[in-house]
Image (cartoon, rainbow over the protein chains, first blue to last red):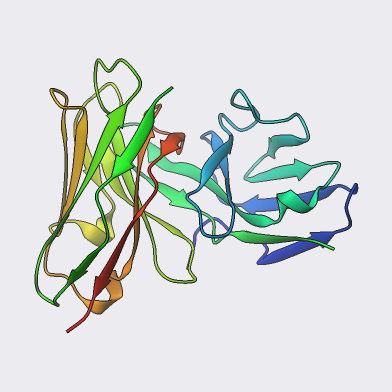
Length: 112
Length: 120
């Protein structure tokens, strides 16, 4: 059971917007940055968002991240069929000297 | 651009040990902070541990304490993850990734994954 809670699945039509939530606590999301990963079927995860809201080079601005309190959100606008994938949030839990990494359970995005 | 290439798939017997390698290329490394994440069939991502950026010391998830060892050889830009006393529940794809910042889950890039099957 993941300490970071994500909805198991979300769906939307092409061109629409979808949001994926990631709920945690003060010891992880509340006090630390959040990362988001996209995992296309049969492939390794790739970084989508780091430091809660920053995009690595090459990631389109259709993908955005935000945080409020102990919850984070990944938003995807202008949905494309190629966005169908599993999405995972991740965060450090604890302080710098003693902690660990947590992942959410993952959310399967279906583009209808 | 940094790329991580992992060793090939393995089949292991219960009780045996596993060692997976992860070689980095395409970049300049003053240190090689590496992390390992596994994914059981049909399941989500599970963090195992890694070499903490800047500090260069290993840290492990409590679940794997005493059973996993993660090291990095900067001279060859290769990281290793060793897991002992394997059981069937350890069947998974094991991924390495470069750990960018301490106290974060910022991992990039990832290796292609190594499928490990534990079966008698």
